[in-house]
Image 1 (cartoon, helix red, strand yellow):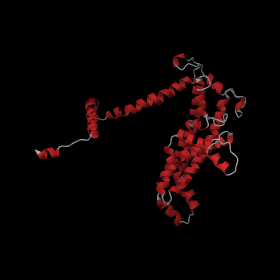
Image 2 (cartoon, one colour):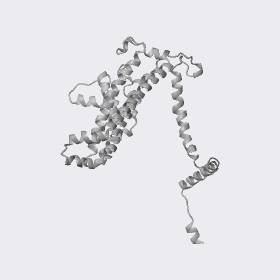
Image 3 (cartoon, helix red, strand yellow):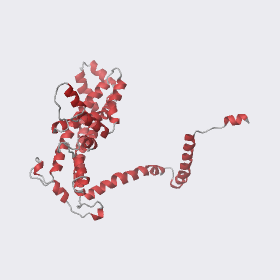
Image 4 (cartoon, one colour):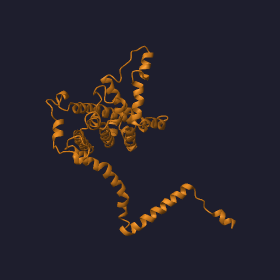
Length: 336
């Protein structure tokens, strides 16, 4: 009797709950599997993800496309009159497209030019700095694992938290100006000067995101066979020739992934800039997503149709750039 009591299994509370959940799922899914067959059960498990995608992604996309052809300030679709291409005509009504002040919707074009400049410098800087960092972290250096974690740490922070910390550092009475004044220099208007504001927006964006792309490039570097580098050394190739002849061509597929992901993320920049400069000073750091937000929800009369039309234009431009990058990537792979 005592030996039987000793062999009795005692479950922890977690195991008890786990077993209860498993039994409940088995009670529900086993009859369903008998009815539809084991092969069709895959659709049952995929269905929740499909439902979430349809409800929270596909349906809002279709509604946004519909709103782009409607007018008025009402939010419900049945209360919005159909206006055709009027919203797009308003956006593209310009005397000189290179001068936003000649456009009817001048804020859209200012945001477009700002976004273009941000994408060029932010994506370019992101790719170059991430590549240099990945090359450095791929070498046999002391405390390599520590430095890899340090560079990735900013990615784990909330963009809003990053923006608020840097705003505290760079504001007129912030840490940076405190150090400059202590050294005898004058205060620098980091947040009120348009050029400084643009620079710091790009710098903070690169600083906070480069760890993610460095990790991707580092994985691409580690997938290159080491025998190729040994063959290059035997042929007398120097490090620069090895980089251009072996590393960069074999890293191009990974570079393409980094380029596409960083481009999409740069075009969609909003929360970090909104918390850091709120689009200022003036409209110096007002980008496309903030324009859409301001037009639809804040300060511009709830112009949902105009905001939806701007988002459709942005989606088309982003799709074209992505397709061009993918085509260029395939051509580079074929040439290699």
